[in-house]
Length: 135
Image 1: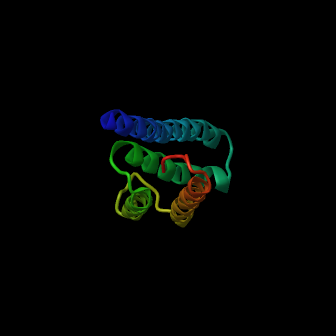
Image 2: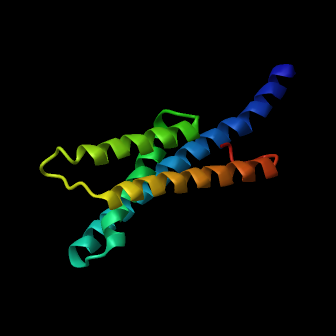
């Protein structure tokens, strides 16, 4: 009888964890698709917003993929993904085929701050609801 009660309590948590993991995968896929659409727009139009959008979306894609595959500590995942992409932006100084741009660095930092603020918002929502989002 006690085992059945324990399993019944475990099941919603398990489902909530799996559904939040797949939410990260869906968000990563969506951001990747948007980045592809923006690449097409960049070929047609010249805009600062379109130029820095791939750097912004890269943080969202990489962070969500890392959260889906590896981590439950989302704050550390956001920090590691943002720092890794900042390192890549800085390495572009030495890569002849790539272009170093301060706007890309600011977009990467801005995306890291944006996704971290979303995490804080979701955690506050979870505290407000007893059966929260599993984050």
